[in-house]
Amino acid sequence: MITLEDAQAKCKTEGAVVAGTQNLDEINWMADTVKALQPSSVSIWIGATRTNACKDVRITAECTALSSFYWTDGSVVGVSGFKWQLGEPNNTGLGQACVQLYMADKTMDDVV
Image (cartoon, rainbow, N blue to C red; front, side, top):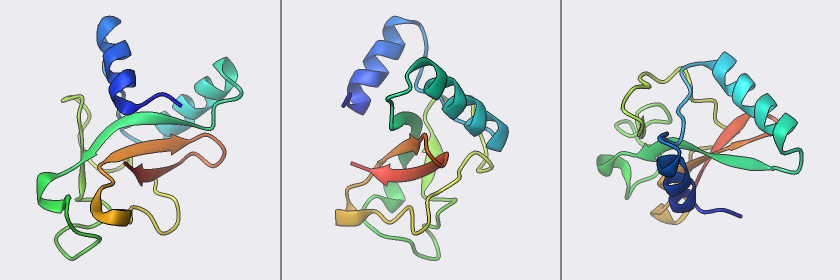
């Protein structure tokens, strides 16, 4: 499995960034494209990270599933692109700052 840092470095060499998603159409396009190009892929990193204020907590009134993360590419905004797996994001171990998109159901999970 490739790490987020490796993915970011590879994108940078290509003049790109790890992508964010504006909406469900983009999630579907991204997952379908990856499945077509790399059928064995289970998940991919996407460009979201946990906010500093929410790094050391689970879901709270201030750190919700929609407010705990932000898009790192600087151009994607809003939360319509977040489609979490059931029970996610849960910040297990209080160290899940990164996000993966799973190909099978096109949902996201917070991971280390």
